[in-house]
Length: 152
Image (cartoon, rainbow, N blue to C red; front, side):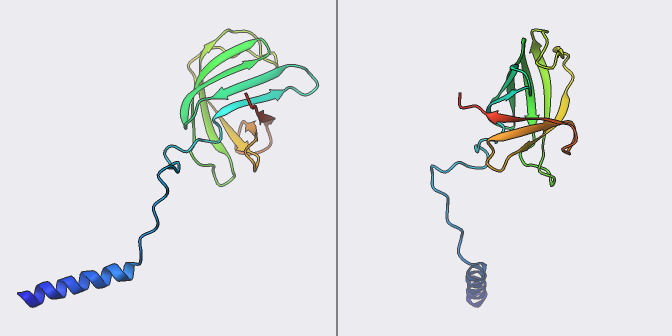
């Protein structure tokens, strides 16, 4: 019986050595993947080319939350959900549902009423993540922007 226990113990030690050392633990103050801020979080601004009309969007942190926006006379609030990682084409899938609107025209003259209907767009960031474009599909054919990260 002692030989069997000793053999099992030797096998487990050999297996542990073959697996190699454990990777180092990250520092306790390092952000985890769950708490890392999504690149969409923050304030973004864009001015319609050839006009002085500005659009500002503010996204709460995380992959789902709220967005507050102003564009021309329009003021809206939305719920949003954005993919945590970009697709192979480099786009994040963004779905927004307008929950509140003052029903006034935006910089393009459009009205966005609080219909409760989700709208899906695709967002692509610059390499420094200080600018983004918003597209109707995962292509650069129908996009607006770039929106620039606003400091405040």
